[in-house]
Amino acid sequence: MLWVRVTSSMNLYLPLAAMPSMPVFWLALTVCLLLFVIWLLTRHQKCNFSGEPEGGITDHARSLAGLTHGALTEGNSVELIQGPAFFERIREDISQAKRSVHFETFLWEKGKAADLVADALCEAASRGLRVRILFDARGSSQLGSDIKDRLRKAGCELHAFHRWKLMNLGRFNIRDHRKILVIDGRIAYAGGHCITDRWLEDKQDVPVFRDVTARFTGPVVHSIQAVFGENWMESDCDLFVEEEAFPACEANGTSMAHVAYLRPDGCPSSVQVLHYLAISMAKTSIRIQNPYFLPDLSGAEALARAARRGVDVRIMTPSVNATDSFFVTYAGHFLFQRLLEAGVRILEYEPTLLHQKIITVDKEWSGIGSCNFDDRSFKINDEVMVGVFDPTVVAELDEIFEKDAGDCVEIKLEEWKQRSVFTRLRERVFYLFNEQF
Image: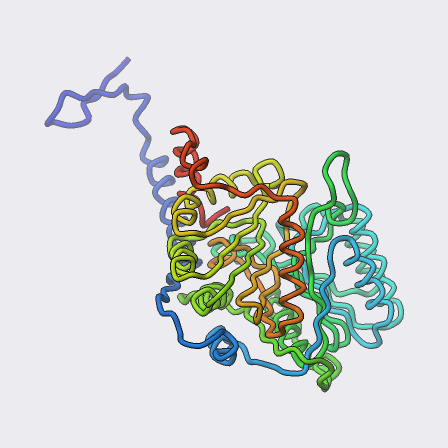
């Protein structure tokens, strides 16, 4: 075997066969440069805010909406829908639609739930309604060509977001994680429900996934319609400017609401700013339910500061045994100790995957939508959160939190400190990839 000296300053020799050829070297360099460019295209500035505004969160309602690229609307009504009841509720609304149905989702897989939703959409299209459907190419890769063909034959306009193609290479990692339904421009849904059987019925020894979605009527529906329109345009679809997509929406409730969804290039996303501002404005209580709780250092510090100033901060997330992504769960554990030491209470939900994405502050404001409390949702994915100023809605969400707490195990600081060295090392290693989980 031939051996080649690699340096002249030390006696280091490598077998010739082990040395990379020049084509392999340039290929590896090109791949590294390409990955760096993709990272540059998707990275965002950190969301830095360390202030603690005077007054309650309601005193800053218009600031909270404006700083997250939204507008505060009055006269809305909000209905919270839990568990499998979601499917029957949207089927009922779609069956009564008069003009249009716009549906956007991330995860849509073959099964009973997929057929139920597809049947409702096909029936609406067969009645002559304009049915526009947008699904994420990766998240809905298991939808199946038979359902897609059935939707198209019924007259639905069906498009995949960020399909795998050369022109999408730099943005393919950006996924459409939103779950939106807009009917006649007058009714809108936003929340966490995905279209798979795990959200519809129990499976073997695992109960149906736990989730909450909100149904809105009133002027805020126009804002949610605009969210759908953004990704519809990004998917090379024709603009929709028909008047029935944005009809006059009269006030029919007492809730003030606003929508955060924009992800400006180079700037923190509006959903991240929304969460961090709301946390900084809290004076008495914060409740967070989220399936993928993986904050960055700024987010963890914001929660810790809130707890240190006397806010009752409680976070609920699935246990390792209930999650569908143990990578995220273990990575999230990396910051638990500093949160616990600051006084944050952390509860792990045991029965099944807890999937609702909810935050409430001071019994005055709540946020509900598709956004996870992690860097992928805050910095990469397209998300939507609807903020609601309504004590009645917040009370209902806090009641859901308390009910779910009965199925949780609370993590105690002293016990948490007893984790093994291996466990701590695993958490640290997984946390290195927190932006991509």
